[in-house]
Image (tube, rainbow, N blue to C red):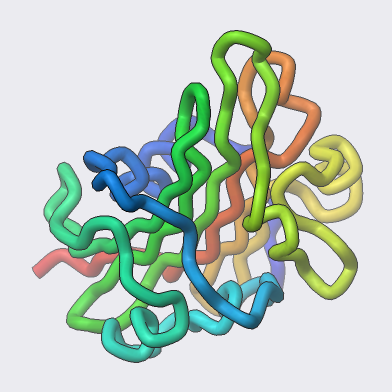
Length: 178
């Protein structure tokens, strides 16, 4: 059973942790031959439930791995842009992937989203960063949950709110608190 829900502020906080960590000088996006977003499963070869080592082999060396402000283990990859960096991140629970997400860059001066390599990451029907937000909302809604896994397509901000600026696939309760 799939439930449709409107995007809420709490999701933005939960899904975006680990995308807001310091960037190293050699920062870059994941290097991967695959670019498919598979709702309820994963992105670009990284799937929910796979080990941290497997995920890192799929996407290459991250810019940083560590714990976010909630204590969740995560790794992130970034590409510097004039404002907010374009980024990808993976969170882990018990050494296994429980959240995979990508975010468009954002130019604060022009209020435009900036998408480079992550723009090729799409679902089989062509949805990903930069897609028309209203079309996705009208067709399927921004959030869909199936068997405890949520796929979220979230609009950007300011003038970029008509386009998808954030995509996340995560397990309910990620991470599970002890």
